[in-house]
Image 1 (cartoon, rainbow, N blue to C red):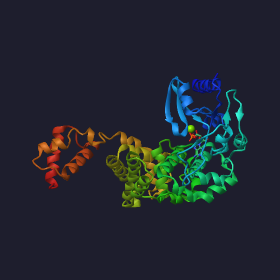
Image 2: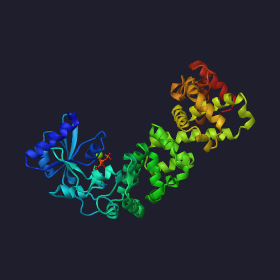
Image 3: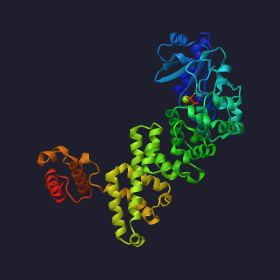
Image 4: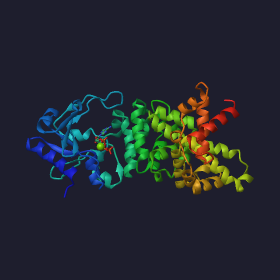
Length: 432
Ligand code: ATP
Ligand code: MG
C-alpha cells in the first residue's frame, strides 16, 4: 500500500492525465525511491501550463509562476507541480530567472544536473531514465547529465551539489564529472555566499561530512568563493575524523573550525562571510572560546601540578567559570566533542590528563552549578542601582558577574538580601 503522501502525488498525476496533460514524478523522489530511501517530498513535472494547473486543482499556491511552479495541496501534503521547461540562457554562471516552457519531458530531464536526478516515474510506476541514472546508481557513480564541463559552466552551484550528493549517497564522482569540477572550480566565485553556505551546511549536517570535506579539500573549490574563506585552509591533515559521530550541527562546525586551527575571532569572521545567523555564530564562537580559554589556563599550570590532587579541584573551578562565561551549552558541546574524539584536546594543546578528567567529570560538574545565568539571580541591575547610591556604569555588570560566580559555586545563597550585602561589600572592597 502506498503511504498517504505518495497517494496524494498519484492523485495529482491522475487528474492531470485525465485532463489530457502529461505528468510524471521527477527529481529527488524518483532518485530516493530507486535508492530505497525515505522520500522527503514528491515533485511533479507536467505539460500543463501554470494557469491550467491553478484552474484544475481546488487548493493551490502560486509558488513561482514565472518558473512554472504551482504548489498543489492534497490533504495535509503539498506537491510542487512544475511545467516542463528548459533554461535557455544562463547568466553569469548562475541559473537564470527566466525559463522557457516546453512540451517534452525529455528536454525537461536534460536540463537537470545529475543522471540520478534526471529520472521520471509515470503513473503506472514505469521508470523513464534517458540518461542512465539507474545504472549509474547501481555502479555507485554520480555523473552529470551530458557534458559535465558545460553543466558546471551553466551553473557553478552544481559543483557543490555534486560534492554534497556524492557524500550523502556514498557515490563516487564519475571521472569526467570530477575532472570538470576541478577544472571549473574557479566559477564558484559567481555564486552568492548564502547559497554556498546552505550547501556547506547540508554537507556538514549530512550522512558523511568527512567524505564531503575530503572532496572539498581535494578539489580546492573552497579557495574560489566570492569572498575569501578561512575554511579553505582545510586539508587532509586537519580532517575532523569523528565529525559524523556528533549529532548537533553546532558541535560539528566547532569541531571542524577548531581542527583547522582557527581561533575564536577567525571563526566568527569566517561565519559572518558565510552569512550564518548571529545566533549560529554565537553558539559556535562560545564553544571555541571556552576551549581556548581552558587551553590558555592549562598552559599556566606545571606538569607536576597536573599530577596532584589539586589539579582536579582547579580544573573543576576553571570548567565552571568557563560555563558561566560562555554558557553551559558551550561546555556540553565541548564535552560531546571530547566524547567522540578523546585525543582532540591534545591536538589543541590540552594535555591528556586534563582531557580525561574533563571527559569523566565534566557533565556532573555542570550539574552541580546552583545557577548558571544572570536571569536566575535573585537580584538584577535595577535592584543594585536602587540599593546603591551610585550612577549606572560598567560596575553593575562587574558586580552581577561576581554575584553569579559566587552563587553558582555555592559560596553565596541566591537570596536577594544576602546578594545585596555581598554587592555592597564587593563595591567597597574594589573601590568600584
Ligand atoms: P534534495 O531536496 O535532497 O536536495 P533534490 O534532488 O530534490 O534533492 P532539489 O534542489 O529539491 O534537489 O531539486 C529538485 C530537482 O531539480 C533535482 O533533483 C534536479 O533534477 C533539479 N535541480 C535542482 N537544482 C538544480 C541545478 N542547480 N541544476 C540542475 N538541476 C537542478
Ligand atoms: Mg527536493
